[in-house]
Every structure is written in C-alpha cells, then in structure tokens.
Length: 122
Picture (tube, rainbow, N blue to C red):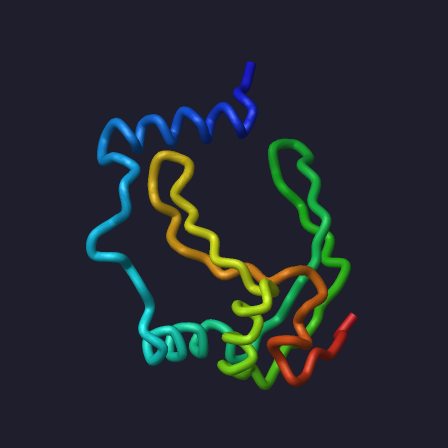
C-alpha cells in the first residue's frame, strides 16, 4: 500500500533532522535583485501557457491540448508585486529524497498580474 503524502513528508522531515538537523541554515540563502531579475527575465520574458488532458493507452501517454495562451511583456516590478501579494509562491522542491530545485508558482488565472499582454490563441 502506497504511503499518503503526509506520511512520506513526515518520514522525509525526520530523515533531514537526523542527517543535518532542522536549525536555521547559516549563512541564509538569498537571491539578489539583480540575479533574480536576470534569471526570471530569461525564463519569463515571453511564454506560452498550455492546458492539456492526458491519457495512457497501451503504455503510451497521449495529450490533448485544450487551451493555449500567449503571455508577453513580462515586467520584473510586477513579478515582485506578485510575490509581495501572495500571487507568486516560492516552492522549495526537495521533498522526495533529492533536490528538484526552487520554483516560482503563480496562482491560476493571475497572468495579467505578471504580463501586460495575455492573448488566448485557442
């Protein structure tokens, strides 16, 4: 029987505590604004948001794309405002035994808070 996420996370947290402890990291990691502006700008400058349904048949995965949105005119100041207002969340994704990296996630349908132009393609 597969463990529920809560159990897996509790076991992972115990393993972290045993290996390195749960005290504050010293020195504290951070992003400088110039680094963050550059990295976010290269990833978010112009992008597409795609929704798709998936199914597996005969061991192969198939996708049906149901919505495509073109997002342009990204603005770093809007990015910072989104973080401050809880529209963009920071996800430290290291819960499965190895580090998947840090991610920024935006709440659904909040693209106009980050981009000046949000155009539905289909």
